[in-house]
Amino acid sequence: MIADLLERTARRASHADLALKTDETTTLQYTERGSACATTAAAQGLNLRVVCEGRVGFAGSTGDDAEDILGRAIESAGLGEFSVLQLPPPAALPAVITHVPRAAAAGLPELTACCDLVRDRLGAGAAQLGLLLERSIGSVRVANTEGVDASYDVSMVSLLVTAARVSDGRRVVIEARLSGSDLPVLQDLEHLVAMVRQRLAWTERSAALNAGRVRALFLPSALPTLLLALEQALAGSAAIHGTSPLASRRGTRVLSDLLSVTDDPLVDGRPGSRPIDDEGVVSRPVPLVRGGVLENLIFDLETAARLGASPTGHGRRATFGKPQPACTNLMVEPGEATWEDLLSAVGDGLVLERVWNQGPANMVGGTFALPAVLAWRVSGGEVVGLLPELTVAGNAHDLLNRVVAVGREALWVGSRSAPPLVVDGLSVF
Image (cartoon, rainbow, N blue to C red; front, side):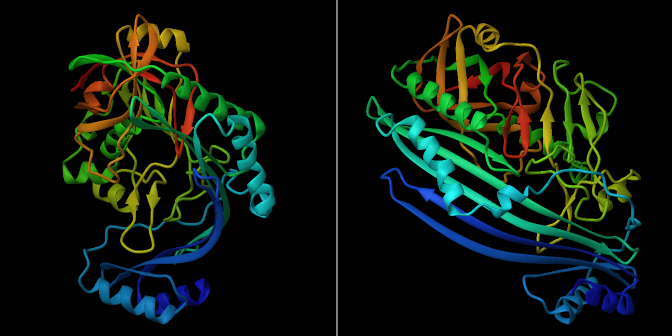
């Protein structure tokens, strides 16, 4: 279909590019009552962009009708913006693992064994356990009228474990996650089990915290509250729209000098790993912040052209709509602090385990006020008990300038790798 579509497109448009993505996901779910179910779903999506008479048009399709998607893209171009695009030529792809045959070939017995190991380690009496394991296999193909035609296979295994317990009349849910291109190894599963056990032990006592501004230890599972704002502010689209508080500050300090951040699509086996972006630009690691100093933004083809910059390989396409710049694997460099050092740095404050996930909100300015779904009281440098549900507020950019300690061990949460961070001045009420 791809060759036929590009051939047809070349006769009716001056330039074009496309991305075709396929996916087959097997889901295995154990409920808290112990019942299990398994399902499989398959999908594909094609996104086509054309330049016709100097204007850009887009169309998406989940089918195989080349003439239909081309006609809709050209019709869209009649109302589109004037093109600023320069499509990339072919180039050699870097090596990166995005697909592991063992994971791709795993059947229900192998997937079930992974879940059973976690259930057996945690024990039925510890809490009400729920498990959700998803194994996805698929492919990505990117092509354009300049000669790019590249593809790669993808496998991804994601495991979510929930452990629910009633504490002082409140139902508390602990969550732990793993994700990667391969099946989880025993060491990672044991680490996950140990973390859940520790959190369950922390729920055995309750504590209180006065409203005000405190020091807070953001665990990696809570850091998306801060990192999402950073990602959005570093995107070329925010620079174009004038909404980014960071875009004009390259070469200056924008975060704590304890923080260094890189976006790296060439890390083997992670959710954002890929050898080429969805617009045909070859992938490479991009240092974003080094010692608190802003070094780079991320761009797709359009935002780079409009700002006179070079594309960084961060074009991401869904089936419908235009490409957008987006991070791949965002990595915060670990520091030197041990777990004891981190709690000592908090002193009298809290540990944030999970903040309510508001979805794909506009966080570019950084201001938030969100429920802390799970948080622990710290007193005298020790975790002393579970806090009631409370609200945490602040500005992510400001708090990332107030980092006082960085943990030595990073943890992957989805496509973000980050160590725990202690920040000063989080508002709690």
